[in-house]
Length: 92
Image 1 (tube, one colour):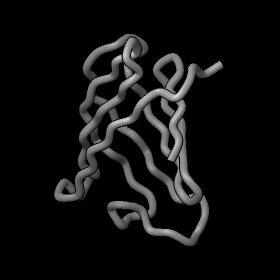
Image 2 (image 1 turned 120 degrees about the horizontal axis):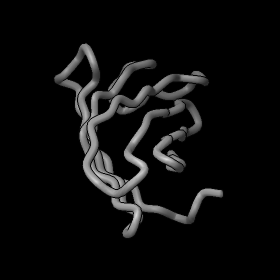
Image 3 (image 1 turned 180 degrees about the vertical axis):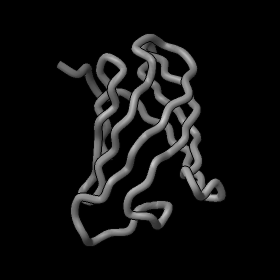
Image 4 (image 1 turned 90 degrees about the vertical axis):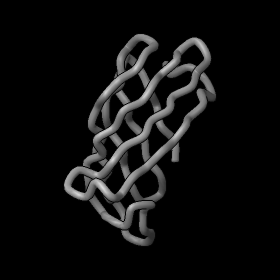
């Protein structure tokens, strides 16, 4: 998927799911909730649930362009996600 981070807002998606949440507008650690919602049939996501909230902790570094987080699905803490993203270019 592709995610755009701008002014602390996180918006992204892939061919079947949309992702939204917030991170700090400055580099640093964070705790946040992200929503994942299915918008089109045809694929199963990594946790096997169509629509969920991810309770996440992570770190964003705007100088190096790296965002990392680890999270658990709200209501199903045995389902976890860990991801790392790297900036491709600045958002306009």
